[in-house]
Length: 360
Image 1: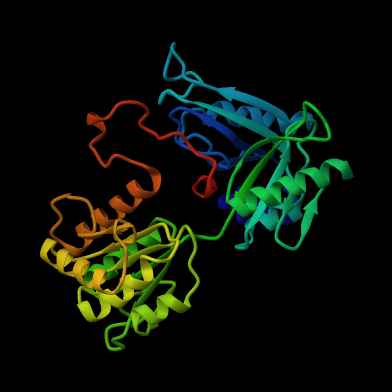
Image 2: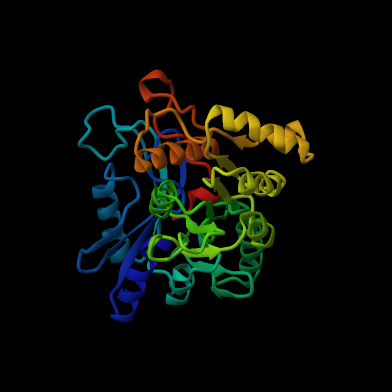
């Protein structure tokens, strides 16, 4: 819901009635993951997407029906054997959708906030909805008992960055769908180079909160890196040791200078981050490993280093190199093979896991 929440707030301010469709589970190959949402107003205007186009027409009509009846609907869409023009997922997967009357404006406002929040949808009746953040709760299911259970479940899932359907323990047969909306993962790029500028732009495009850091103030400027959320002039290892990182943080080292690289990687490879990559030739990589061993890093810590950074795409320009780096990061985080799809088997869209990446 988060990706359309600002527009929903505008509808609320204008008194526009609407119905909201949310993907609550996915099986097999499907374009959108749990939490993807589409809304249809009483005038027929549509916002968002739940399937990349495959079943949008049928979902649109479901939203119109819910607007008329005020009763929430749970519907499953799968592959259509008869015709690609029927309401089926031609990519072969199955999605479970929940269509409800518009949620309270306080819940929409919470979803639009940049702060971490979990939205719990009661999968019955009118689809009552509540939002849970670190310090507040808004909305209600109409039952204090269910509110307490759903809120506790939502907080636990928000802490894990997870989304999915959960049973309500106090009422057998009743379920809630919880969508966790967390902050953007960090991409920290070290080295104010042309390659860094391309990596920053692509990282921003991919939805990361991007920081550029270099000790050389003449190169490390907001003018040179307009797409960066932060531009920091500091020694890389000192900045990394003092800044906040987590299990989703990505670290890209493009300094290509031992006096920066080695102290920086000594810090980076001991942090519980998602990815650490460093630019350099194979010879540079081997020399760097030697220096890191001398600094006391273990073989296990060294295996976390992606170097030389990126996939072999035949890249020549900084922009092409940035694509190769981004491709390796995506493959490492999602468990991709990095092979051409024609050489792989199974679903073209990987199963949509209910982790931090499955929020919208």
